[in-house]
Image (cartoon, rainbow, N blue to C red; front, side):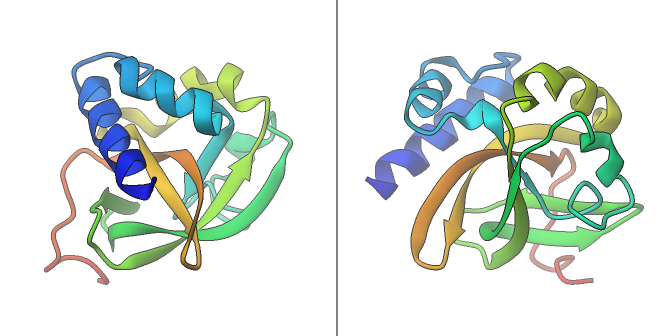
Length: 147
């Protein structure tokens, strides 16, 4: 099952990169299975206690902790690049039924340095959710991660 989910995430993110906001058929399949539109994974300023957490004020919901795989670094702001085989990076995971109506505002807030992608979120060894995450447009390399 995890392999199938990872493949669907790859396909959905490729479709999103070409302008398909919902990620094409793969994105629709993930939405049906996981309700992705109601999940946000935050590794930086949108997380509880983060400088920009107030941007999520209209999105009451429940927060959990989890991990995503990839590379995180600090530039002007925290940045992240998803990588299936990368190290586990801690995230805060928000589930809110208000997120679908707020994505356009969050996308505008994040600007052109970030792209909203789908990522599997892990709770230990278990796949917990597939969530939206703002990834760096300019990828984080392994050599930059952890700075």
